Length: 419
Image 1 (cartoon, rainbow, N blue to C red):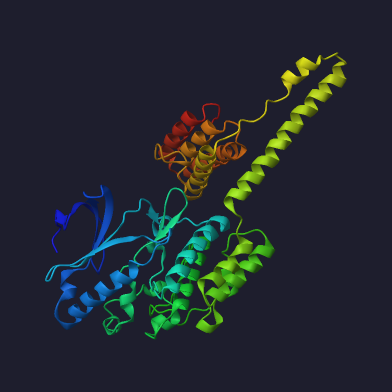
Image 2: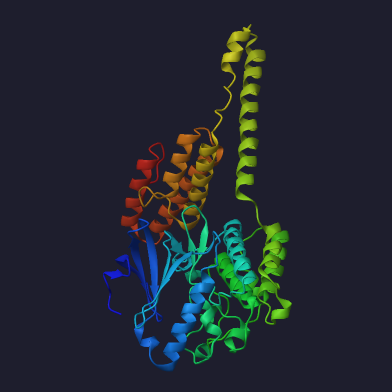
């Protein structure tokens, strides 16, 4: 298929990506006036008997995938095929970056964020498995992280084709680096294969490295050892022990020794997960009470030390006014901004790009709640990270980049010296 200007009613705007199977386009639905993504199959794969089978299975799977309605799964809107034309899926257009894009930059995620991501993946898999649909290609490239720290699993559209005879010719397979041992052996697989692949993704998010992968490009000889766990980023021995158990069970070579379903895996993660909104609210209340207590203490000390007769009206004027009560919409917006700020801090988007950085998220949060301690703490952490990054650039001999970043940083924090 040459790059078309239109597929059916959909106007093609750009190519989002290309692979061995086909091309994914960014398109526009003029009837519903919304952006969409369109996934196609390469015409060369549709020839002969195998091609007819692939076309038929693609059609049947489109119907199956259309049943998937979950907030963490890229939705399929439509399936289109002419008698001799090229079949294609019309999907939800999701703005975000795949986890692979972050990992490729040498990043890894803290435990709270990693478990937050994997919990959403498992929730989506639980839904699909209940409908008898196995993804078969769970990997960082198929998990999209959006700016509000929500994730979407992509590539459900053709995943189920892999259990056909066509699959066993080696033309349509999962990604070897993220395949379960039984999938690598070409055996029949079930939902527990997705569990294994999700365990691999969790390990990579936490360490920034892929789990051991032998030269024959199979998962059959993978074995966990203590060296693998030394790379896990946690200072708590109790949490580290629990995390070892979770990863070891998810990556058990024998399916019967793994978590038997996504919910079981999800439940095992719960002790390691701190609910984001609860922690924000608790931290906010605790810090605000501490600040108020400090002000009252200073007033009391001043009263005793100076032995000045203070009128009640004057004293009331010095006590901090009651905090502004935020509307529900403001609370939701604030929570979203703080979440975006945390994600940007974690992936290194500190003050750039303009309009989509940790600095922007935290300053917008302070516009809603000027005394928000989480936003202020976020900006403090941001400043520390900037100083560290500038120092590292200098240490590596990148003086020009260091000076440029220092200048940008001082524009954001005029009272600080980053040079």
